[in-house]
Image 1 (cartoon, chains in turn brown, orange):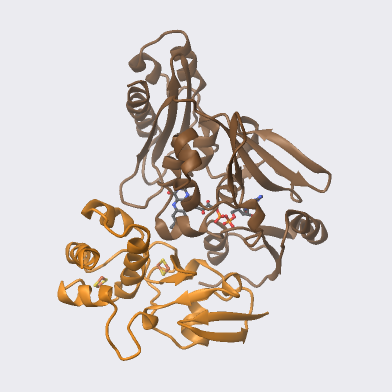
Image 2 (cartoon, rainbow over the protein chains, first blue to last red):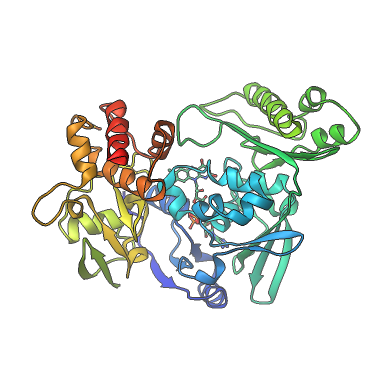
Length: 274
Length: 152
Ligand SMILES: Cc1cc2nc3c(=O)[nH]c(=O)nc-3n(C[C@H](O)[C@H](O)[C@H](O)COP(=O)(O)OP(=O)(O)OC[C@H]3O[C@@H](n4cnc5c(N)ncnc54)[C@H](O)[C@@H]3O)c2cc1C
Ligand code: FES
Ligand code: FES
């Protein structure tokens, strides 16, 4: 399968990418690792007329300790998130979640920025960064703005990013020793999650993100509210599907997804509380 | 668009349409057909090659993305005199292939895995090859071959 024809331009900096997006309008799309976009283009589910390749904007590939948070360049590949010693120390939940994305070949190419911008509720990193209270930095023609992960996801494959903006950085608060767990339920190796749960806990504080539990990644606020008011893990986990609006598909009915969310949240919080 | 990709040490320059996939470039422009297309949907790993030393699925990369890069395909693994790469030899000795369709991709993924983790456990080998499917389901001997190669 071959994509529909398109024009290809390469940007060497964020500024150049933004200028190219402005110049080519709505028909242009950014290309990072290409591991969501190229498969869609091969299936002709996406037919952009211009691709702006940002894959060589190397100064957007980094993981840095920025005091209270870790700053991750949008072009950082999954493999580099997974293997980052800085993340292993300060945000181990994210490094671990990245190791569950696809397979090694996918992780050698796909980027964190591409994964978040793609806004697929079945992806592992949107829900994980949501659980961690991350902030995304977007750059456009008028400068940069910060977007809380909780405000970023608008609908299936839809985010608040403007057509001429790109994600440049992901800021993730340090976990400061919080317990954590990532639970991914799938039927075969390498598959996407049927349901996934990313959770952390520090005393009465917690964050729980749900993968594939609706048209957007979901923050299970009811669970964290229960933990904050002293509920035990089982009672809190029983509320895991309360904030979600899951859909049925070939893999799972709505009820099965809700069940999985409760069970996996229970497992994740038990591990995070240990 | 004119691109130059170094494949198995030889630079290949060609004028390609941007929509040309890397696997297509390797097979059709360069004529190296050892890299197979299995699923064409990024799942099976038959098309795995090394891009700048790391395993990647060439059906999911545009040739223009590989402009200036170094690619190794299965044809580049054996020595010039035909001596098999240790991973190829291990597959042969351990019966790590049946029909052989998945084998080029398996060998490329397995060598990339050992470059990152030279002494993996059996479980790490199984997880490390999760992007490669074998329809003959010879996984047991494939894993045995990779373990044998790591130990030698
Ligand atoms: C076989 C396979 C299995 C996979 N399994 C999983 C899995 O289990 N879990 C999972 O989470 N993911 C999975 N993925 C998806 C993978 O994580 C992708 O790498 C990721 O979703 C997209 O990142 P990318 O860099 O490849 O983005 P691209 O495909 O290049 O881009 C994706 C979208 O984001 C836009 N974009 C890219 N970068 C930016 C940016 N910096 N700013 C603004 N917009 C941008 C593009 O325009 C495009 O619309 C899988 C992919 C494959 C092929
Ligand atoms: S042909 Fe590329 S992954 Fe199957
Ligand atoms: S040996 Fe036949 S597909 Fe693997």
